[in-house]
Length: 375
Image 1 (cartoon, rainbow, N blue to C red):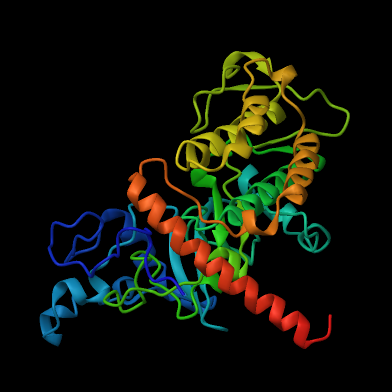
Image 2: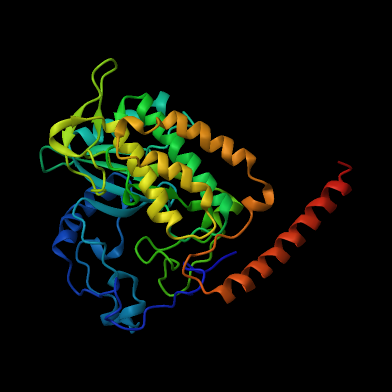
């Protein structure tokens, strides 16, 4: 079991007020006040916000004698007025609650993808919508409830097989979206997330997510390869729904990935090919540029990020090629550690040697087990 977010750096409990991401506010941020004002309503719907957002909250460290930096209610949510973490009262699960416009495109697409029929499809990697309800006081505002998800690479990848699984799930999910006539149009890293529940047997804090809910103890976790995770596409705020038989053409320059060459406010372009480009760019930026032993990604990156959209393959073709490549990958290769491009040569040699011994021990145990079972 792993207990570190970075393989070479073990996170420590915060020790100074100036540490990035841990600024103890004695009063709520403006972006937090809206959620405090809806806390009672959200609880009536079955979702409990953290103590910081409950009516009449006062900083616990003023009376508890506990250090500010070890008081959970000193941890503010990120400055996002539209999203907050909560605990579902029915089962204690962490969820996200998102504030959306009633009937807007984002919630319409997300809810349609979570319908009874589409939601059961294993190829559907669109974030599930667990609940939906209107704001009781503000007309035109609704809330959608989603599972609590982490960014796709937090914590870091450990094994080649984890990257093989990530790529297949992302391409499978993209094929599903395109089959429904939906172009995501913003498939950047921030919108590619994972359900890491199985990785964290003791849970983790929703904001200080390398720590347990007490924010003082490092949260232990299993590698993805040991337990399996599921990846999701989130945020359909600039997505397009193309009716069957209609021209697949849009305009607009929104989206986090501004390297897409065809983006234009005037010249129409194919949004499905934008998705191909952006996923290819994710493979390049977040994986190929980071790790030195993932050369199998290069052909996919090259074909998916061609400047001419017409020369880029479809998601279906990419998924077929990826699955063929994955099937050809030997088990030893799948269980091999990923090596960061900037890690020292000496560390690479030592870590690879240790890893080889571990794989050998695992293989001996596996072979011994098969003999014992008579297979």
